[in-house]
Image (cartoon, rainbow, N blue to C red; front, side):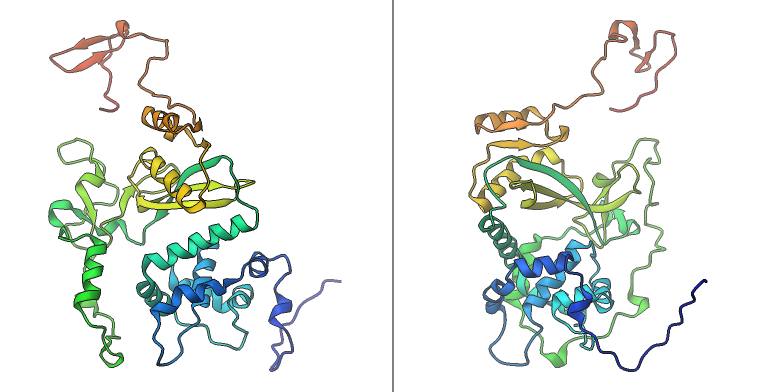
Length: 360
């Protein structure tokens, strides 16, 4: 007989949040393996000895860790997911009847701590892997991944229309801290800007999202001519299977007994070529792990003469295939089969048909 379930909410429940989280859940395994109390000495210098107690800094770092592990980049969405996900609540130590902190605490914490605290957090995680025997001398695997920027393609402007900041970001932030006093609680602005003050996305200066050709017929190089108004450091990238979007690029080194420990991570613009960062990524790996690099494994993007010479001088064995250049003749037709017309600046194929230019 077919059953039919009827949902009848109860007024009171007798249950344990700990029992609802599976024993083999990733967050439970992490909680059992890692003592997060090392966060307190890192965060202590950034808090006052008086005033109301803050949100536990371990909760802040665990929250960002949940966002990283499950690919949740929006802080608002992250806190909403923690609100309804029992495993996330258990990992942060918030019971079913406790209120989850507001998403704004994450933004304030990032501004308070700065990059150095998070770099120490990452470094300590590598040290924990070493103590657990997960990290030893062996191959270092290097690759990159794209990180989509939180900026719309509609924010693109012609570079000559954009404002060029006179100071680097770090210098500007440093001066903000040294030249301005912190606002009091009463003076904080809590209201959002009115819609009339928001920049309009219907501005006719916005280039069409997917325009690749200039008015004169030549191909447009987006990152040379366009810049995002809201995120000038992000660059336009296009990959097979994805639309064009603004992104950054994470250059990552992985090592360990089974190649399971991230030992270096660097972020550049999305247009930065992978091969140009190899030396810096390996240097970061050596600095964090204190282990020599004896073997490097990477794909053909890193197969350049410069990288081969660099690794050879350092005595590092490279498992990197050389690049295959599509412009090199494959032996089917040699250049003597083609006729070049200097006046028209074009080639004729063996059948006498003009050939279209594919690239410069």
